[in-house]
Image 1 (cartoon, rainbow, N blue to C red):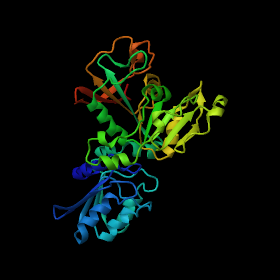
Image 2: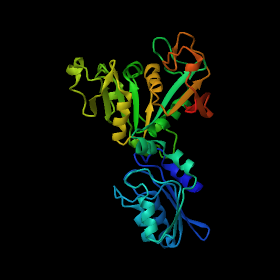
Image 3: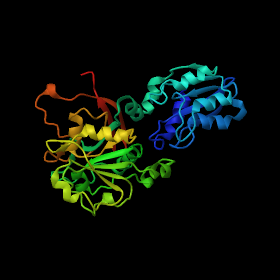
Image 4: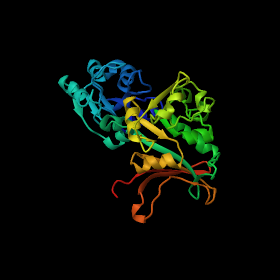
Length: 365
C-alpha cells in the first residue's frame, strides 16, 4: 500500500478535479503491475495496472489507495474492471466519500466473491487528497494561503512594492502550489500593484511533467468589489478562465459589460461592502474545485484567517529585513495575548536561500 501511495503522488499536479489514486497488483508475493491516475477523463489507477498485468491479474491482490469507483463518469466503474479481470482480493486504503461511490464499490466487489479488506494506511491516503475529501464531506475546497515575508515578518514596503521579497527558487516553488490548485484567489489591490498574471508557467515548474501540469491552468479569481480592474491588466492577457467577483452594488452597473470572453463577472453577497468569502468558497466547490490557493495581501489574507477559512498557511521567509514601516503578514488587529491565533507547524525546509514554513490552524486551542 505504501508503494501505491507513492504512485498516487505522481498525479499530484494533474488529476484535479479527480482524486489522486495509485494501485499495485501482487501475485504470489511479487508485484506484477502498477498504475496511477494521471489525468481526469483518462483511465483510473486500477485500469492502468490491470492493462499492464493482462492475464496475470487473475487471482492477484490489488492494493488501491481509494475505494474502487462504482459509477460511470468519463470512464467505466473500476470495481467492474477488477471483477472482470478475476482479481481475488482487494485491499483499500480508505473509503471514497463521493456520494456516487460511498461504499458501493466495496459492496460490488464482495457481491462478486472478491475478498475485500481495509482501511489500511488511511491517514496517509487522506493526506493525498485534502481538497477532494473536504469538498465531498463538507462542500468546501481545501484553502491554502501562500505568503512571502522578510525575517521581520514584513511582506511589502509601505507603498505596496513587493518585488521581490523572496528568491527565484521560492518563486519557482510557488509554481507547484499553483499547478496543484484548481483556483487561485487574489484581491484587486494585489493584482493592480503587482500587475500579476497568476498563471502556471511550465518553464518554472521544475518537474518532469511540467507541460502537462501547466496545460490546465487554474481558475483565476479576482475579488474586486468596485470593479476597478483595468482592461489592459496583465491578468487578462492569457485567455484562460477568470472570475471577476464584485459585491453587486448598483455603482458597478456600468462596468459589468465589455469584458473579454474568458472573464466571467460574478456578483456575490456582501457584508459592509466586502464579498462573502464563505459564499465564494461554496461557489468554487460547486465548480469542482478541490484545492484553492490564496495569493493576496495582508487585508484579504487576514480576512480568510479571521473567518476560520484557511486550512493551511505556507510562508516563504527571506533572510532580509524590510523595517517597521513595511506591511505586515496579516491584517490581524489583536490586542491581547489570549486573542492570538495558534498554529501547528507541519514542515520547515530550505528553499534556495529562503525557508518555507507550512502550518495549519491549531484546533485544540
